Image 1: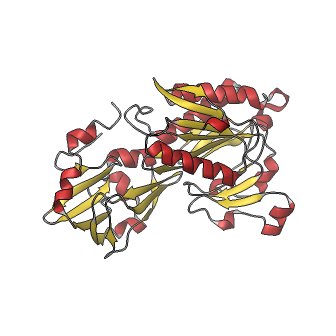
Image 2: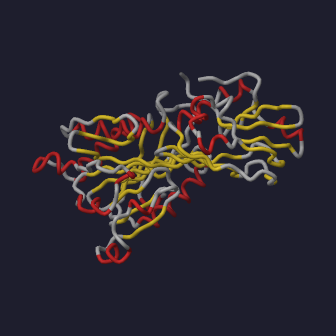
Image 3: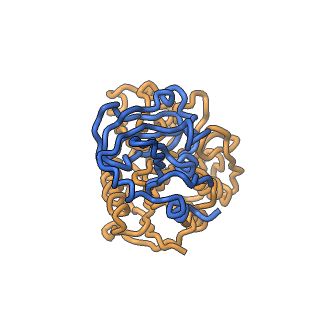
Length: 127
Length: 223
């Protein structure tokens, strides 16, 4: 199971890529594999203010639905509109084209609370 | 092996009560106040729609449903429309997915495996159908799957037709799949169909093996 070193993670299987003062967020390869073929994604409103741990998105496959939680407090700057027509991007490239949203963290020191790749890998089933 | 609680309900549990119970258990499981818990039960007749279930797949109007004594509920689970009634086992595993997971195929695959192996025990040649999750055999689909993850705790789950009256399925387009037949152990095996209890016991054993958890029986009032 892929767990890129340069990303941060949450226990609820979101990943965070720090890009300057913004953070790009998606769900991990493990998360998409548990959901199987995704058919629908509910994304947050651009401009909305969210708190860490808020349910901000829902990803749904033929048989499963899962909430996605904001890893940080802040403002949603951008969402991946392409997912509404092509939710399978998440299955194909969960750490790349399958990103969900970009947020601006209200408090950059919150990043320290997130897991690094090694700590996240320890949460995954042994292969 | 991880220990999980297993509660086998003696009486059919109305769908809304089962949802409230699961919501309570999921919240407690997220906070690690309880271990993983599996519910095995039957529902009084009810049609349920998944999160994005489409009412066009319910073929009877409200009046007809009421006349037939069938409730209609929407549900937070994934998947489309399905039908539950006595004679069908419903399995609701409330599991925190973690490092001792059921192989690399994932939770959906594990639920399918429980359905397939249980059917196999009673002599039904059961298999997966690519792109159509559930339990299938030559006569049609005997197990339906739809679940939800909340903070990666699972709820909702799988239903398995043992001797449920299949006419209830005529009221829906099961899982939104037009032209697919629904079957039961009884419609496949005829007089050789097992009673509900041996199937429950086989389901319990298969859950133990496939979900890799040791199951401890608990009563409803101890949940």
